[in-house]
Amino acid sequence: MLQLKDAGLFRQRCYIDGKWTAGDAADEFDVINPSSGAKLGVMTGIGETGAKQAVDAAENASNIWRHMTARQRSRRLMRWHKLIMENQDDLAVIMTAEQGKPLLESKGEIAYSASFVEWFAEEAVRIYGDVIPSHERESRLIVLKEPVGVCAAITPWNFPSAMITRKAAPALAAGCSIIVKPASQTPFSATALAELSRRAGIPEGVFNVICGDSEKIGNVLTRNEKVRKFSFTGSTETGSKLMEQCAGSIKKISLELGGNAPFIVFDDADIDAAVAGAMASKYRNTGQTCVCANRILVQNGIYDEFSKKLLKAVQSLIVGDGFTENVTQGPLIDMNAVKKVESHIADAQSKGAEILTGGRRHSLGGTFFEPTVLADTTSDMKIFSEETFGPVAPLFKFDTEEEAVKMANDTQYGLASYFYSKDSARIWRVSEGLEYGMVGINTGIISAAAAPFGGMKQSGIGREGSKYGIDEYLEIKYLCMGNVYG
Ligand code: NAP
Image 1: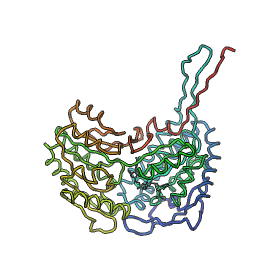
Image 2: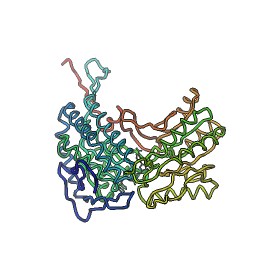
Image 3: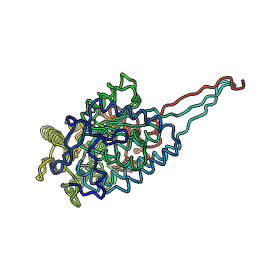
Image 4: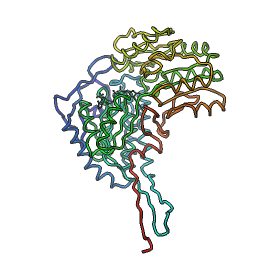
C-alpha cells in the first residue's frame, strides 16, 4: 500500500465528465511498480464507446468553458496549481511507485508540472487579438483568437505528470476542453491530477482522463471529427502513425517525438562544468528523457581528461529503489527498455567500442541497469543514430568544429542539443549551425515553462510551454468590416 497523506489522490478509474467511471472489466489492466515488480493497482479501461462518450462530454463542456471569462478560467487554473503544489509529496510518491524515478526527481517533476499550470493561468488573461492597418479607407481588419474546441492528448510514461500539464494547461487557458490518454504504465499520476482538477473547480467534462487499449482509444481521438486538436508526446514511430490517422479529419496537430541529442565538448570548454552538465543531461530519469544527451562528442585535445572525470562521476551514481535515500538511478521502465540498451551496447562493442564502466544488468535484478560509459564509439554504431533511452554515455572523438557540427546534424532527429565552449564567436557559429529546436549552451538542463520546447525534423511539430505554447490551442479568426462610414 502507498503511504499517502491523502489516500483520495490514488484513483484507479477513468475520469469522464467529472465522474469516476467503472469502465469495462475486459479493458482493466494491472499497473506494476518497475522497481519491485509488484502490482501497484488495477486501472479501469474503456474501449471505443467509452472514448466517444468522453469526446461528447468534452464537446458539451467546451461550449460552457469557452464562454467563461479568461479571468474565471485563470482563477481555476491557479487553484489547480496551488493544489498540485500542496500535494507535491503525495503526487511524488505515486509517481515514484509507478515510474521508478528517485523520489527527489519525482518531487522536481511535480513542481515542473505545476509550473505549466501557473504559467498558462497567467497567459489565459493575455490572449490578445489584433487590429491590422487596412488596405482600404473604408474597411477595418480585425483578428480574434478563439479556442480550437475539443482537444485530445496522448502522453508517455517518462514524465507522467508534466507531459500532461504541458498540454492540458494551455488548452484550458485558451478555453478548450481536453481528453488525456496517459501511458498505460503510469496512469495514476494522471488520475491524481484529475482529482485535483475536480477540487480546483474545473467544470465537469473540461479535463478528462481515459485509459485502455491505446490503439482503440487512439483511433477515436485521432479520427473523431469533434476533436479539433490532437497533441502527442511519445516515439516518432507512433507519432507518425497518429499523424496519418489525423489526416482524414484535418486536425490541428502537435507532435513531441524522439530525440538523439548531441552533447559537444570543445577544447576551450570548462571541463568540470561540462562533466556536470553531461551527468545532468544523460543520467536524469536513468537516461529515459527525450532531451537526454545521446551522443557525447569530445574534441581530441581534452578527450582523455573529460572521459576520466566523467567516469569518476558516473561511478559515484547510486542505483536502487526510488524510495531509498540517496539513490540517483531508478530502474528502467520495463524489460523491453533493458533489451534495447543491451542491444546498443552489444552492437557498439562488436564494432570496437570499449566499456569504461557498467555495461550490464545490475546485480539488484529486475530492470535495474549499471550506469555505463562507452569509449571509442563511432558513427557506424546503432548508438549514433538511434535513441538509446537508458543510462549509457557513448564518447565520440572529433578534431574540428565543422566536423562536430556535421556529426551532430547527421540524424533524422532535431530535438535538443548541447555544447560547451567559452569562445563567444564559436558559440554563435555553432548555435546557428545546429539543426535542433533547442540548444543548451554551457548547460545540460534546458526545460522551463517559460521556454519554447519542441523539435525540428522528425522530432516533431509545434512548441509547448512559453508564450508560443498557447497558439497551438487557438484559431485565428479574421473579421473584415467593410463600408464602415455607411
Ligand atoms: P510510445 O510507445 O510512442 O507511447 C507513448 C504513448 O502513445 C503512450 O500513451 C502509448 O499508450 C501510446 N500509444 C502507443 N501506441 C499507440 C497507438 N498505436 N495508438 C495510440 N496510442 C498509442 O512512446 P514511449 O516509449 O512510451 O515514450 C518514449 C518516447 O517518447 C521516446 O521516443 C521519447 O523521446 C519520447 N518523448 C518525447 C518528448 C518530447 O517532448 N519530444 C517527451 C517525452 C518523451 P500505451 O502506454 O497504452 O501503449
